[in-house]
Image (cartoon, rainbow, N blue to C red; front, side, top):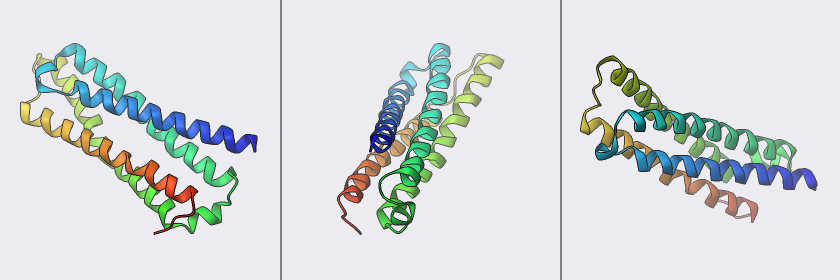
Length: 150
């Protein structure tokens, strides 16, 4: 029982960390605010965001394997697969902003120029889409915990 509580806490803490750093990225990735300091901050936020994303996946997998319910029970649930697919989609969506932040920083260091306005807006939109998808994962988790199925 103590292991289940610890795993649940770790999972929730990882999710909250992910939300905080996703929100921070969305707040800072704006045309009117972008400068060298913000670029550096976005790179740091992105690293923490990706670590949090990995921790969400790892803690969720740990709950699946060592939690109260068996792994075979979880794997047989469509909502578990929905959570898995949503998190995978968010990971894929997060790669483009990560690569953009690195590219923008290299560009700034090379010639002091910032990315075009359209690119900044497109990256921010992708961050926002991923953040909105993230909200669906706990909703699926709540339904899964209460035996609601698709």
